[in-house]
Amino acid sequence: MTEELQNHEEAWNKCLKIFRDNLTPQSFKTWFEPITPIKLENKVLTIQVPSQFFYEWIEEHYVDILQKSLRKVVGPGAKLEYNVIVENSNAGKIPYTVNLPTSKQNKNTANEVNMPLEVITEIKNPFIIPGIKRLNINSQLQSRYNFDNFIEGECNRLARSAGFSIAQQPGETAFNPFMIFGGTGLGKTHLVQAIGNQIKINHKNKVVLYIQTGKFTNQYVEACKNNTHNDFINFYQQIDVLIVDDVHELSKKEKTQEIFFQIFNHLHQNGKQIILTSDRPPKDIKDVDERLLSRFKWGLSADVETPDFETRIKILENKIYSEGITLSKEVVEYIAHNLDNNVRELEGALISLLAQSSLNRKEIDLDLAKQVMKNLVKNAAREISIDFIQKVVCDYYNIEVDTVKSKTRKREIVQARQIAMYFAKDFTKASLKNIGSHFGGRDHSTVIHACQTVNDLIDTDKKFRYDVDELQKRIKINTI
Image (cartoon, rainbow, N blue to C red; front, side, top):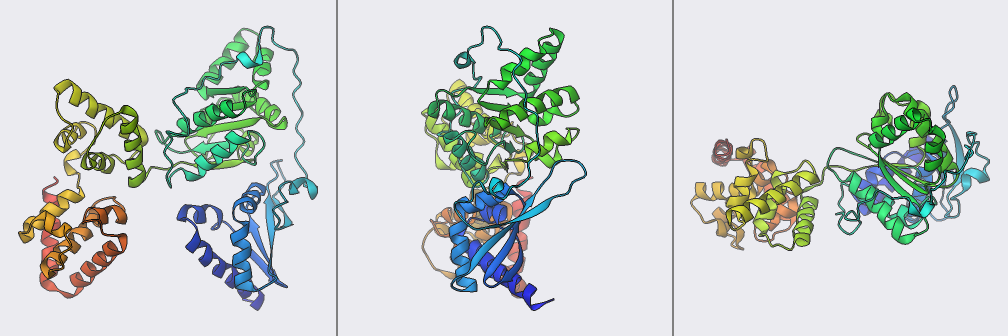
Protein backbone atom coordinates (compact mmCIF):
# COMPACT_ATOMS: atom_id res chain seq x y z
CA MET A 1 0.00 0.00 0.00
CA THR A 2 1.43 3.41 -0.99
CA GLU A 3 2.06 6.25 1.46
CA GLU A 4 -0.55 8.37 -0.40
CA LEU A 5 -3.22 5.69 0.05
CA GLN A 6 -2.34 5.38 3.72
CA ASN A 7 -2.59 9.16 4.15
CA HIS A 8 -6.02 9.72 2.66
CA GLU A 9 -7.57 6.68 4.32
CA GLU A 10 -5.99 7.55 7.65
CA ALA A 11 -7.22 11.15 7.38
CA TRP A 12 -10.75 10.08 6.53
CA ASN A 13 -10.87 7.51 9.34
CA LYS A 14 -9.90 10.22 11.82
CA CYS A 15 -12.65 12.44 10.41
CA LEU A 16 -15.14 9.57 10.72
CA LYS A 17 -14.33 9.28 14.42
CA ILE A 18 -15.25 12.95 14.88
CA PHE A 19 -18.48 12.51 12.90
CA ARG A 20 -19.46 9.42 14.90
CA ASP A 21 -18.99 11.30 18.18
CA ASN A 22 -21.10 14.27 17.07
CA LEU A 23 -23.93 12.73 15.01
CA THR A 24 -26.77 10.32 15.68
CA PRO A 25 -26.06 6.70 14.68
CA GLN A 26 -28.74 6.87 11.97
CA SER A 27 -27.31 10.06 10.43
CA PHE A 28 -23.79 8.65 10.50
CA LYS A 29 -24.88 5.37 8.89
CA THR A 30 -26.99 7.10 6.21
CA TRP A 31 -24.68 9.93 5.16
CA PHE A 32 -21.10 9.00 6.05
CA GLU A 33 -20.69 5.22 5.81
CA PRO A 34 -21.35 5.27 2.00
CA ILE A 35 -18.55 7.82 1.42
CA THR A 36 -15.20 6.57 0.10
CA PRO A 37 -11.95 8.58 0.39
CA ILE A 38 -10.12 8.79 -2.96
CA LYS A 39 -6.97 10.82 -2.51
CA LEU A 40 -5.22 13.49 -0.44
CA GLU A 41 -2.99 15.91 -2.34
CA ASN A 42 -1.80 19.36 -1.27
CA LYS A 43 -4.24 19.34 1.66
CA VAL A 44 -7.18 18.63 -0.67
CA LEU A 45 -9.09 15.50 0.35
CA THR A 46 -11.22 14.00 -2.40
CA ILE A 47 -14.17 11.86 -1.30
CA GLN A 48 -16.52 9.87 -3.53
CA VAL A 49 -20.28 10.17 -2.92
CA PRO A 50 -22.91 7.97 -4.61
CA SER A 51 -25.06 10.63 -6.30
CA GLN A 52 -25.69 14.29 -7.07
CA PHE A 53 -28.48 14.33 -4.49
CA PHE A 54 -26.15 12.86 -1.85
CA TYR A 55 -23.65 15.65 -2.59
CA GLU A 56 -26.35 18.33 -2.26
CA TRP A 57 -27.61 16.93 1.04
CA ILE A 58 -24.09 16.76 2.51
CA GLU A 59 -23.42 20.34 1.38
CA GLU A 60 -26.69 21.56 2.86
CA HIS A 61 -26.53 19.81 6.23
CA TYR A 62 -23.00 18.63 7.05
CA VAL A 63 -20.49 20.85 5.24
CA ASP A 64 -19.55 22.74 8.43
CA ILE A 65 -18.61 19.64 10.42
CA LEU A 66 -16.82 18.25 7.35
CA GLN A 67 -14.69 21.36 6.96
CA LYS A 68 -13.95 21.74 10.67
CA SER A 69 -13.01 18.07 11.01
CA LEU A 70 -10.80 18.21 7.93
CA ARG A 71 -8.96 21.28 9.21
CA LYS A 72 -8.44 19.58 12.55
CA VAL A 73 -7.11 16.36 10.96
CA VAL A 74 -5.19 17.68 7.94
CA GLY A 75 -4.33 21.16 9.19
CA PRO A 76 -5.11 24.81 8.34
CA GLY A 77 -5.96 25.41 4.70
CA ALA A 78 -7.37 21.90 4.20
CA LYS A 79 -10.01 21.66 1.50
CA LEU A 80 -12.57 19.11 0.42
CA GLU A 81 -13.47 17.95 -3.08
CA TYR A 82 -16.29 15.61 -4.06
CA ASN A 83 -16.13 12.87 -6.65
CA VAL A 84 -19.81 12.49 -7.59
CA ILE A 85 -21.04 9.31 -9.26
CA VAL A 86 -23.52 10.25 -11.99
CA GLU A 87 -25.92 7.48 -12.95
CA ASN A 88 -26.93 7.40 -16.61
CA SER A 89 -30.14 5.44 -17.09
CA ASN A 90 -29.70 4.95 -20.86
CA ALA A 91 -29.02 1.35 -21.75
CA GLY A 92 -25.43 0.50 -22.53
CA LYS A 93 -23.98 3.46 -20.68
CA ILE A 94 -22.19 3.23 -17.36
CA PRO A 95 -22.04 5.66 -14.45
CA TYR A 96 -19.34 8.32 -14.63
CA THR A 97 -18.00 10.82 -12.11
CA VAL A 98 -17.45 14.56 -11.92
CA ASN A 99 -15.35 16.41 -9.35
CA LEU A 100 -17.00 19.24 -7.45
CA PRO A 101 -15.34 21.51 -4.85
CA THR A 102 -17.10 22.05 -1.56
CA SER A 103 -19.22 25.19 -1.54
CA LYS A 104 -22.61 26.08 -0.09
CA GLN A 105 -23.36 27.79 -3.39
CA ASN A 106 -23.07 24.67 -5.52
CA LYS A 107 -26.70 23.53 -5.43
CA ASN A 108 -27.05 23.82 -9.21
CA THR A 109 -23.63 22.48 -10.02
CA ALA A 110 -25.03 19.81 -12.32
CA ASN A 111 -25.86 22.49 -14.87
CA GLU A 112 -22.70 24.54 -14.26
CA VAL A 113 -20.45 21.64 -15.22
CA ASN A 114 -22.64 20.77 -18.20
CA MET A 115 -23.58 17.40 -16.80
CA PRO A 116 -25.46 15.68 -19.66
CA LEU A 117 -29.09 14.95 -18.87
CA GLU A 118 -31.31 12.38 -20.54
CA VAL A 119 -33.54 14.03 -23.13
CA ILE A 120 -37.23 13.36 -22.43
CA THR A 121 -39.97 14.28 -24.87
CA GLU A 122 -42.45 16.62 -23.18
CA ILE A 123 -46.05 15.52 -23.32
CA LYS A 124 -48.26 18.25 -24.77
CA ASN A 125 -51.75 18.71 -23.42
CA PRO A 126 -53.93 17.63 -26.39
CA PHE A 127 -56.91 19.57 -25.05
CA ILE A 128 -58.37 20.92 -21.85
CA ILE A 129 -61.02 18.70 -20.29
CA PRO A 130 -64.33 20.61 -20.29
CA GLY A 131 -65.66 21.36 -16.81
CA ILE A 132 -62.45 20.69 -14.85
CA LYS A 133 -61.44 23.59 -12.63
CA ARG A 134 -58.02 23.24 -11.07
CA LEU A 135 -58.93 24.51 -7.64
CA ASN A 136 -61.98 22.26 -7.41
CA ILE A 137 -60.04 18.99 -7.67
CA ASN A 138 -60.59 16.96 -4.49
CA SER A 139 -57.19 16.22 -2.93
CA GLN A 140 -58.45 12.90 -1.43
CA LEU A 141 -56.45 13.77 1.71
CA GLN A 142 -57.72 13.07 5.21
CA SER A 143 -57.33 16.08 7.49
CA ARG A 144 -56.55 13.94 10.55
CA TYR A 145 -53.12 13.17 9.13
CA ASN A 146 -50.70 15.99 9.97
CA PHE A 147 -47.18 16.60 11.23
CA ASP A 148 -48.38 17.43 14.75
CA ASN A 149 -49.66 13.90 15.38
CA PHE A 150 -46.92 12.11 13.42
CA ILE A 151 -44.51 11.07 16.17
CA GLU A 152 -40.86 11.49 15.24
CA GLY A 153 -38.26 8.95 16.30
CA GLU A 154 -34.98 7.51 15.15
CA CYS A 155 -37.02 5.11 13.00
CA ASN A 156 -38.47 7.86 10.77
CA ARG A 157 -36.45 11.04 11.38
CA LEU A 158 -34.95 11.30 7.89
CA ALA A 159 -38.29 10.71 6.15
CA ARG A 160 -40.12 13.22 8.37
CA SER A 161 -37.43 15.90 8.03
CA ALA A 162 -37.34 15.58 4.25
CA GLY A 163 -41.14 15.56 4.11
CA PHE A 164 -41.35 18.74 6.16
CA SER A 165 -38.84 20.44 3.81
CA ILE A 166 -40.95 19.42 0.82
CA ALA A 167 -44.06 20.89 2.45
CA GLN A 168 -42.31 24.27 2.61
CA GLN A 169 -41.07 24.24 -1.01
CA PRO A 170 -42.79 21.53 -3.09
CA GLY A 171 -40.98 20.83 -6.33
CA GLU A 172 -38.07 23.08 -5.39
CA THR A 173 -35.94 20.76 -3.28
CA ALA A 174 -33.63 17.93 -4.29
CA PHE A 175 -36.22 15.52 -2.87
CA ASN A 176 -38.14 15.04 -6.11
CA PRO A 177 -39.36 12.40 -6.42
CA PHE A 178 -39.56 11.57 -2.73
CA MET A 179 -40.11 7.89 -1.95
CA ILE A 180 -40.89 6.57 1.52
CA PHE A 181 -40.54 2.81 1.91
CA GLY A 182 -41.05 0.37 4.77
CA GLY A 183 -43.29 -2.34 6.16
CA THR A 184 -47.02 -2.27 6.79
CA GLY A 185 -48.38 -0.02 9.53
CA LEU A 186 -45.25 2.08 10.07
CA GLY A 187 -46.80 5.43 9.12
CA LYS A 188 -45.99 5.86 5.42
CA THR A 189 -49.53 6.89 4.47
CA HIS A 190 -49.79 9.17 7.50
CA LEU A 191 -46.57 10.96 6.57
CA VAL A 192 -47.30 11.50 2.87
CA GLN A 193 -50.79 12.77 3.66
CA ALA A 194 -49.32 15.05 6.33
CA ILE A 195 -47.01 16.48 3.65
CA GLY A 196 -49.99 17.01 1.32
CA ASN A 197 -52.09 18.68 4.02
CA GLN A 198 -49.23 20.97 5.01
CA ILE A 199 -48.66 21.97 1.37
CA LYS A 200 -52.33 22.90 1.09
CA ILE A 201 -51.88 25.17 4.11
CA ASN A 202 -48.60 26.72 2.92
CA HIS A 203 -49.47 26.95 -0.79
CA LYS A 204 -53.19 27.42 -1.26
CA ASN A 205 -52.83 27.73 -5.03
CA LYS A 206 -51.21 24.29 -5.39
CA VAL A 207 -53.33 21.40 -6.64
CA VAL A 208 -52.56 18.38 -4.45
CA LEU A 209 -53.81 14.86 -5.17
CA TYR A 210 -53.39 11.69 -3.12
CA ILE A 211 -54.21 8.38 -4.79
CA GLN A 212 -53.52 4.71 -4.16
CA THR A 213 -51.85 2.80 -6.97
CA GLY A 214 -54.73 0.34 -7.20
CA LYS A 215 -57.22 3.14 -7.75
CA PHE A 216 -54.93 4.78 -10.33
CA THR A 217 -54.81 1.48 -12.22
CA ASN A 218 -58.60 1.09 -12.12
CA GLN A 219 -59.07 4.64 -13.40
CA TYR A 220 -56.73 3.96 -16.31
CA VAL A 221 -58.57 0.73 -17.21
CA GLU A 222 -61.88 2.61 -17.19
CA ALA A 223 -60.40 5.38 -19.34
CA CYS A 224 -59.30 2.81 -21.92
CA LYS A 225 -62.75 1.17 -21.92
CA ASN A 226 -64.50 4.53 -22.38
CA ASN A 227 -62.01 5.84 -24.93
CA THR A 228 -61.05 8.72 -22.61
CA HIS A 229 -57.36 7.87 -22.50
CA ASN A 230 -56.28 11.43 -23.35
CA ASP A 231 -58.62 12.91 -20.76
CA PHE A 232 -57.00 10.69 -18.14
CA ILE A 233 -53.50 11.87 -19.02
CA ASN A 234 -54.57 15.50 -19.20
CA PHE A 235 -56.18 15.38 -15.77
CA TYR A 236 -52.99 14.12 -14.08
CA GLN A 237 -50.87 16.65 -15.95
CA GLN A 238 -52.68 19.42 -14.08
CA ILE A 239 -51.56 18.23 -10.64
CA ASP A 240 -48.91 20.27 -8.80
CA VAL A 241 -48.25 17.68 -6.07
CA LEU A 242 -48.97 14.04 -6.92
CA ILE A 243 -48.90 11.56 -4.02
CA VAL A 244 -49.07 7.90 -5.06
CA ASP A 245 -49.38 5.28 -2.32
CA ASP A 246 -48.08 1.68 -2.67
CA VAL A 247 -46.33 2.24 -5.99
CA HIS A 248 -44.89 -1.30 -5.81
CA GLU A 249 -48.36 -2.44 -6.93
CA LEU A 250 -47.43 -1.33 -10.46
CA SER A 251 -45.58 -4.65 -10.69
CA LYS A 252 -46.52 -6.60 -13.84
CA LYS A 253 -48.96 -3.89 -14.99
CA GLU A 254 -47.06 -2.91 -18.12
CA LYS A 255 -49.60 -0.56 -19.70
CA THR A 256 -50.25 1.24 -16.42
CA GLN A 257 -46.50 1.58 -15.94
CA GLU A 258 -46.20 3.18 -19.38
CA ILE A 259 -48.91 5.75 -18.70
CA PHE A 260 -47.48 6.50 -15.26
CA PHE A 261 -44.06 6.91 -16.86
CA GLN A 262 -45.47 9.57 -19.20
CA ILE A 263 -47.26 11.41 -16.40
CA PHE A 264 -44.18 11.21 -14.17
CA ASN A 265 -41.96 12.70 -16.89
CA HIS A 266 -44.35 15.54 -17.62
CA LEU A 267 -44.78 16.51 -13.97
CA HIS A 268 -41.09 16.23 -13.15
CA GLN A 269 -40.03 18.28 -16.16
CA ASN A 270 -42.43 21.03 -15.15
CA GLY A 271 -41.17 21.25 -11.59
CA LYS A 272 -44.12 19.48 -9.98
CA GLN A 273 -43.62 17.50 -6.79
CA ILE A 274 -43.98 13.70 -6.86
CA ILE A 275 -44.28 11.73 -3.62
CA LEU A 276 -44.40 7.91 -3.54
CA THR A 277 -44.66 5.11 -1.00
CA SER A 278 -43.61 1.50 -1.34
CA ASP A 279 -43.19 -1.53 0.88
CA ARG A 280 -39.60 -1.90 -0.36
CA PRO A 281 -36.77 0.27 -1.78
CA PRO A 282 -36.76 0.96 -5.55
CA LYS A 283 -33.96 -1.53 -6.22
CA ASP A 284 -36.09 -4.36 -4.78
CA ILE A 285 -39.31 -3.63 -6.70
CA LYS A 286 -39.80 -6.47 -9.18
CA ASP A 287 -41.41 -6.50 -12.64
CA VAL A 288 -41.37 -2.73 -13.11
CA ASP A 289 -39.77 -1.08 -16.16
CA GLU A 290 -36.16 -0.07 -15.50
CA ARG A 291 -36.82 3.39 -16.97
CA LEU A 292 -39.46 3.98 -14.30
CA LEU A 293 -37.33 2.54 -11.48
CA SER A 294 -34.45 4.80 -12.50
CA ARG A 295 -36.74 7.81 -12.11
CA PHE A 296 -37.78 6.66 -8.65
CA LYS A 297 -34.10 6.93 -7.73
CA TRP A 298 -33.69 10.51 -8.96
CA GLY A 299 -34.61 12.13 -5.66
CA LEU A 300 -34.56 10.75 -2.14
CA SER A 301 -35.63 7.31 -0.95
CA ALA A 302 -36.08 7.24 2.83
CA ASP A 303 -37.09 4.25 4.90
CA VAL A 304 -39.33 4.10 7.95
CA GLU A 305 -38.49 1.35 10.38
CA THR A 306 -40.16 -0.37 13.32
CA PRO A 307 -40.41 2.19 16.15
CA ASP A 308 -38.15 1.65 19.14
CA PHE A 309 -39.47 1.42 22.69
CA GLU A 310 -39.22 5.15 23.44
CA THR A 311 -41.01 6.05 20.20
CA ARG A 312 -43.76 3.52 20.93
CA ILE A 313 -44.25 5.18 24.31
CA LYS A 314 -44.57 8.59 22.63
CA ILE A 315 -47.07 7.22 20.09
CA LEU A 316 -49.26 5.79 22.84
CA GLU A 317 -49.02 8.94 24.97
CA ASN A 318 -50.00 11.08 22.00
CA LYS A 319 -52.99 8.84 21.26
CA ILE A 320 -54.03 8.84 24.91
CA TYR A 321 -53.83 12.62 25.03
CA SER A 322 -55.89 13.00 21.85
CA GLU A 323 -58.55 10.69 23.29
CA GLY A 324 -58.67 12.73 26.49
CA ILE A 325 -58.02 9.78 28.80
CA THR A 326 -55.46 8.91 31.46
CA LEU A 327 -53.46 5.70 31.74
CA SER A 328 -50.83 4.73 34.27
CA LYS A 329 -47.20 4.61 33.21
CA GLU A 330 -47.02 0.85 33.86
CA VAL A 331 -49.95 0.15 31.51
CA VAL A 332 -48.47 2.30 28.74
CA GLU A 333 -45.07 0.65 29.09
CA TYR A 334 -46.63 -2.81 29.17
CA ILE A 335 -48.39 -2.21 25.84
CA ALA A 336 -45.30 -0.61 24.29
CA HIS A 337 -43.09 -3.47 25.43
CA ASN A 338 -45.31 -6.25 24.12
CA LEU A 339 -46.35 -4.76 20.78
CA ASP A 340 -43.28 -3.89 18.77
CA ASN A 341 -44.27 -4.58 15.15
CA ASN A 342 -45.99 -1.40 13.98
CA VAL A 343 -48.02 1.66 14.89
CA ARG A 344 -51.36 0.16 13.88
CA GLU A 345 -50.99 -2.62 16.45
CA LEU A 346 -50.32 -0.08 19.19
CA GLU A 347 -53.37 1.98 18.31
CA GLY A 348 -55.49 -1.16 17.94
CA ALA A 349 -54.47 -2.37 21.40
CA LEU A 350 -55.37 0.98 22.92
CA ILE A 351 -58.79 0.96 21.24
CA SER A 352 -59.45 -2.60 22.46
CA LEU A 353 -58.42 -1.62 25.97
CA LEU A 354 -60.76 1.37 25.97
CA ALA A 355 -63.59 -0.76 24.60
CA GLN A 356 -63.16 -3.46 27.27
CA SER A 357 -63.00 -0.84 29.99
CA SER A 358 -66.17 0.87 28.76
CA LEU A 359 -68.24 -2.26 28.08
CA ASN A 360 -67.30 -4.04 31.31
CA ARG A 361 -67.11 -0.88 33.39
CA LYS A 362 -63.64 -1.78 34.59
CA GLU A 363 -60.83 0.51 35.50
CA ILE A 364 -57.91 0.35 33.07
CA ASP A 365 -55.12 -1.22 35.09
CA LEU A 366 -52.27 -3.61 34.40
CA ASP A 367 -54.45 -6.70 34.93
CA LEU A 368 -56.99 -5.53 32.34
CA ALA A 369 -54.15 -4.66 29.94
CA LYS A 370 -52.74 -8.17 30.27
CA GLN A 371 -56.17 -9.69 29.70
CA VAL A 372 -56.73 -7.66 26.53
CA MET A 373 -53.22 -8.28 25.24
CA LYS A 374 -53.69 -12.06 25.39
CA ASN A 375 -56.08 -11.73 22.47
CA LEU A 376 -53.75 -9.48 20.50
CA VAL A 377 -50.29 -10.94 20.94
CA LYS A 378 -49.14 -14.39 19.93
CA ASN A 379 -47.56 -16.22 22.86
CA ALA A 380 -48.68 -13.46 25.19
CA ALA A 381 -48.00 -15.75 28.13
CA ARG A 382 -44.33 -15.67 27.26
CA GLU A 383 -44.02 -11.91 27.64
CA ILE A 384 -41.30 -10.79 30.03
CA SER A 385 -41.35 -7.36 31.63
CA ILE A 386 -38.82 -5.55 33.79
CA ASP A 387 -41.30 -5.64 36.68
CA PHE A 388 -41.59 -9.42 36.35
CA ILE A 389 -37.81 -9.85 36.32
CA GLN A 390 -37.48 -7.68 39.44
CA LYS A 391 -40.07 -9.81 41.25
CA VAL A 392 -38.39 -13.12 40.35
CA VAL A 393 -34.94 -11.90 41.42
CA CYS A 394 -36.22 -10.35 44.65
CA ASP A 395 -38.23 -13.48 45.54
CA TYR A 396 -35.11 -15.58 45.00
CA TYR A 397 -33.05 -13.44 47.37
CA ASN A 398 -36.01 -12.87 49.75
CA ILE A 399 -35.90 -9.09 49.57
CA GLU A 400 -38.49 -6.44 48.74
CA VAL A 401 -38.72 -5.07 45.18
CA ASP A 402 -38.70 -1.50 46.52
CA THR A 403 -35.31 -2.23 48.07
CA VAL A 404 -33.56 -2.76 44.73
CA LYS A 405 -35.06 0.54 43.56
CA SER A 406 -33.73 2.37 46.61
CA LYS A 407 -30.36 4.07 47.08
CA THR A 408 -29.03 1.50 49.53
CA ARG A 409 -25.50 0.24 48.84
CA LYS A 410 -25.69 -2.97 50.88
CA ARG A 411 -23.75 -5.67 49.09
CA GLU A 412 -26.62 -8.17 48.77
CA ILE A 413 -29.02 -5.49 47.52
CA VAL A 414 -26.51 -4.16 44.97
CA GLN A 415 -25.91 -7.68 43.69
CA ALA A 416 -29.65 -8.40 43.27
CA ARG A 417 -30.10 -5.05 41.54
CA GLN A 418 -27.25 -5.75 39.11
CA ILE A 419 -28.58 -9.22 38.28
CA ALA A 420 -32.06 -7.81 37.65
CA MET A 421 -30.59 -5.15 35.35
CA TYR A 422 -28.60 -7.84 33.55
CA PHE A 423 -31.72 -9.92 32.85
CA ALA A 424 -33.73 -6.82 31.91
CA LYS A 425 -31.19 -6.08 29.20
CA ASP A 426 -31.10 -9.72 28.11
CA PHE A 427 -34.82 -10.54 28.10
CA THR A 428 -36.48 -7.25 27.13
CA LYS A 429 -36.17 -4.75 24.31
CA ALA A 430 -36.08 -1.79 26.70
CA SER A 431 -33.32 0.77 26.25
CA LEU A 432 -30.59 1.18 28.87
CA LYS A 433 -32.17 4.49 29.87
CA ASN A 434 -35.56 2.85 30.36
CA ILE A 435 -34.08 -0.03 32.36
CA GLY A 436 -32.35 2.47 34.63
CA SER A 437 -35.61 4.34 35.19
CA HIS A 438 -37.15 1.12 36.58
CA PHE A 439 -34.41 0.97 39.24
CA GLY A 440 -34.93 4.25 40.99
CA GLY A 441 -34.11 6.52 38.08
CA ARG A 442 -30.53 5.36 37.57
CA ASP A 443 -28.75 6.32 34.34
CA HIS A 444 -27.64 4.12 31.45
CA SER A 445 -24.00 4.01 32.61
CA THR A 446 -25.12 2.29 35.83
CA VAL A 447 -26.89 -0.37 33.77
CA ILE A 448 -23.80 -0.89 31.60
CA HIS A 449 -21.63 -1.27 34.72
CA ALA A 450 -24.12 -3.72 36.24
CA CYS A 451 -24.15 -5.94 33.15
CA GLN A 452 -20.35 -5.93 32.96
CA THR A 453 -20.06 -6.82 36.65
CA VAL A 454 -22.48 -9.73 36.28
CA ASN A 455 -20.60 -11.05 33.24
CA ASP A 456 -17.29 -10.86 35.12
CA LEU A 457 -18.67 -12.64 38.19
CA ILE A 458 -20.24 -15.39 36.05
CA ASP A 459 -16.74 -16.14 34.77
CA THR A 460 -15.02 -16.04 38.16
CA ASP A 461 -17.54 -16.96 40.90
CA LYS A 462 -19.04 -20.46 40.86
CA LYS A 463 -21.79 -19.70 43.44
CA PHE A 464 -22.75 -16.53 41.61
CA ARG A 465 -22.90 -18.42 38.32
CA TYR A 466 -25.23 -20.99 39.90
CA ASP A 467 -27.56 -18.21 41.11
CA VAL A 468 -27.71 -16.61 37.66
CA ASP A 469 -28.42 -19.96 35.97
CA GLU A 470 -31.16 -20.76 38.47
CA LEU A 471 -32.78 -17.33 38.05
CA GLN A 472 -32.65 -17.66 34.28
CA LYS A 473 -34.53 -20.98 34.51
CA ARG A 474 -37.17 -19.46 36.79
CA ILE A 475 -37.75 -16.52 34.50
CA LYS A 476 -38.17 -18.79 31.49
CA ILE A 477 -40.32 -21.40 33.27
CA ASN A 478 -42.68 -18.82 34.72
CA THR A 479 -43.30 -17.30 31.28
CA ILE A 480 -44.27 -20.54 29.49
